[in-house]
Length: 160
Image (tube, rainbow, N blue to C red; front, side):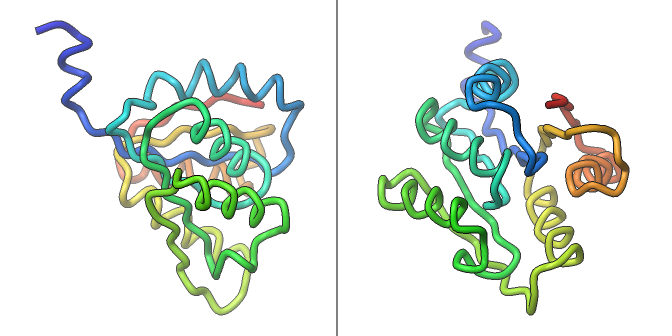
């Protein structure tokens, strides 16, 4: 059996996490091409946080460049997200590219709600791809990557 045949039978569940402060879209396209495309088989499932920045950019890129299932997870409801994120989620839902939108129903937005969302995604994934800006250990991206490490899950870090 070839490597490609082996990989064709593997369903991937991947969490994407990253900074809200992102570089130019052209730079992100290159990063996503290098670090997401290898995991974006048609039977892959990507969990994305539904916020602005990497979450929205990765959602739009994956919707355009893959056939993978896309699951957006928000801490409260979609309408509680920033306007740009809401627009992206609605655009991809209307285009039929979202397998699911999960609204976790937190009482209010804040660090605890975001961390709970990130744990929810990691708990359902086998792999985490993180796009952090800097090394601040209190960032949500690093929290998510470190949580995945505590769970013994593989991580790929692609700094932006």
